Length: 254
Image (cartoon, rainbow, N blue to C red):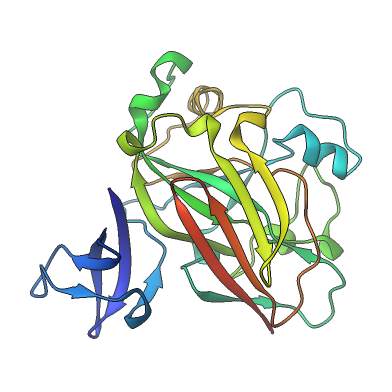
């Protein structure tokens, strides 16, 4: 099932995709159907009692590492992001006026479903609630080290669109064989497959849970294939993953 969080009728609503519309599933409007264009889309993540941990991977596709003239890593290269960077489907991302190169990154995002500590690869899928699409923008002007991106590169407000749907793990039989595609103003600029990850999803869950606790609602952004291009104000970027949906985002000047 495809789940969404939306703002509609003056409140945040929970909904699911139903016959090309949004079906509200909770509250006084339960059962009401609304159109995709009648709502404000929010990140499709339920609130959590603790601070949400957002982990992102660098250089997790060999072709992307080659594109950036880096050797493929021998263990996961990860950095943390704040939840304030997350925005929803059809939202706007700000490009600072003084930068020369800002690019998208279409990524499979894994949503943790239950507390994970010292999880083995063979059991990793049991700890996943679902999957969504993330666009992890980077501003290369501010980059000091590809292996440790600083906060201005990867942790900026509005620079991590996510959604539109949270798709139940049970509805994604093989997350390691999903096609990815990005278009800029309707032109395909990036294509790839999660098959090409250097460290697959079970490996990542085993790795991170070996030294830190993953809690329900935490996110793991799993990296992007090659095909990055500079994005300018006015550009409409669509990052799409097979079976998970197409995430639309527009660049504006800050």
